[in-house]
Image (cartoon, rainbow, N blue to C red; front, side, top):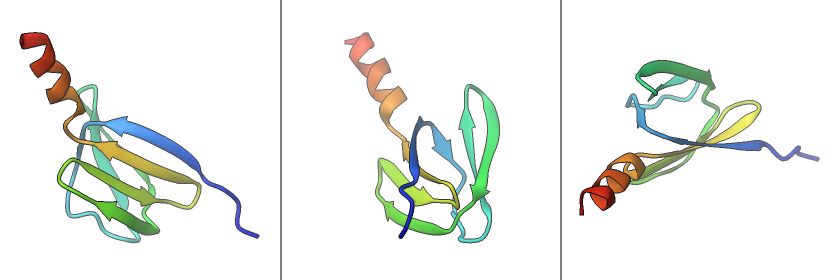
Length: 74
């Protein structure tokens, strides 16, 4: 029986290309951080990315910060 992985939602930039077997690097609050090694890339799109590591499922949204700034500027 497979254990359900905890989902982690983040907004920001992910360094591409994302490679299975290597950690993912992402920028949050002006600092680059890394995840556990990527085990599976689930979905990629122009505005989000979903992948799994051994213990977590990561969901990154790229446009969230820009969208908030555009709403505030209007």
